[in-house]
Image (cartoon, rainbow, N blue to C red):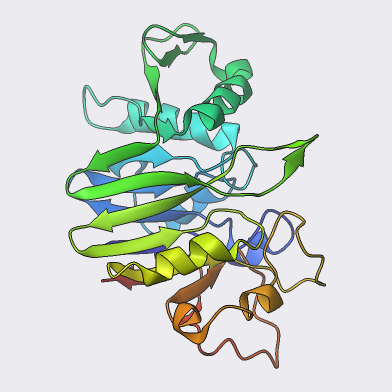
Length: 259
């Protein structure tokens, strides 16, 4: 399995350094784009990857650094117009409750959604955006499974947000998405004999527990054998004086991981 970060930063000022926390995963069907934030197209260009090489886009939740409607429309337009003859627009996959929000966000840009075909047709053009509400999808021999996480509240309920379990044969990695500290699923993931790496979001900002993100100090409460499987992401640069050992490290823009 091969995963490359397009960026490992957040939505606000640090994204200029690390870019948004998005990644691409190599499969037999092409690259799978894991979230498509505001900096995704720029980062893909820096890597020399053309939009038509993206086989599918997976969206974990509806925040601009993970699902920018403008970036998604650019991806559709550029891949369909500049790709090989007959190239179809890049399909989008996400859990049903996220897809509902995504379609609502994209509608002002692209026209009308057809419930029967699960596609969005753009005004005046024949190209469609394929939308696949699903909790699992497989590309080649790589399986992606969305699992719910707690990120932010809307009133008394959580806004839909998901992590992703990625499996290829006997190798499995976890992608936390955006989440508050939730030790139960982290420990369960670490105890899975297939698990090689847990990519977990974190912040080094002043600790305010339970408000949208996981603080680095909260992660330190986890057992050593769990931390040894963890790579930090969605962060600003690691502050001087902080030793992230025994974690595997902190992801950087364009960094490649292979298993």
